[in-house]
Image (cartoon, rainbow, N blue to C red; front, side, top):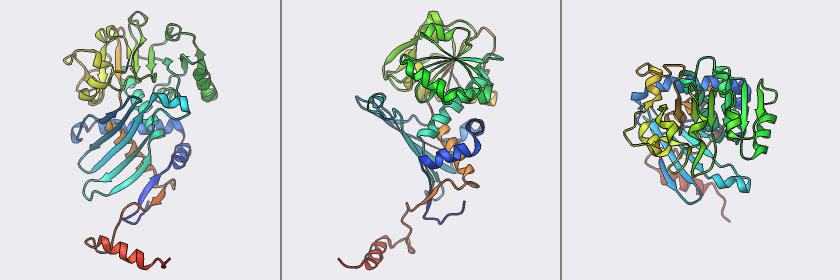
Length: 351
């Protein structure tokens, strides 16, 4: 990828689809998880902050920034559950990767699809440290836009091939069955959460309602399971009964953010939790016994977006799936920005 300094590569939705299909969804997940893991291993090099959120009655708009001192990234992302009623996505996003030294952006990309991929890759990466040994059956509760990504990530990283599906809208489960029909899964559509959990040692909850909900009640969760709690990702939105949290070992991305946005918002602020990066580098244990209940309280964190943008930029080095965007004014004399307007005016014939 060789560009003029005033041109920024832009990955559109169409380009992202072609980029993913050029290497395959599961390989994309595997390699993306490797980039995320590599950045978690250098956790202390990053600037970290909770995301800047603007909440409204209908949803939330957020900015998620981070930097490792050499590169900087941010993601714009929204969450509007009611969008589905008008045929819109509940979550959309785009992101920027930039050079810290010059401040110039080096990549602008759609991140609606990329966020779905990185969310699932992070879930599976966490489960690779926390799930019971030889877990091969996952209960997938909430079968909306993220569901297939979660299934494929767990298949790619953990070899999960049996899925038990439940959604209050049965058509969402049937949509999953259609989309995953030829991708190596044994799927069962269930009529209740309790039925969905039967025989599953992995549980992913990924519902969309922006409210305190009890998707999993304490009596339904037995020993030895790993819960991948993805849907509770903003203040006032939860999926698990607090009693489940109290008898589980909780792992999360960035404690100051998750204690406000995740399932942990239901617990006292001093309740013990473990950040995932500590497990990845070996500073803290993951699963320690067959009877242990582990929870990955996933809300999404800026370093994962940084990793995803870094991975896409690497892929573009030998793939033509971007366009050159004339985004940056770059006059011959950096002090003469107004001169660009004068020269452009001289080139335009009078009306």
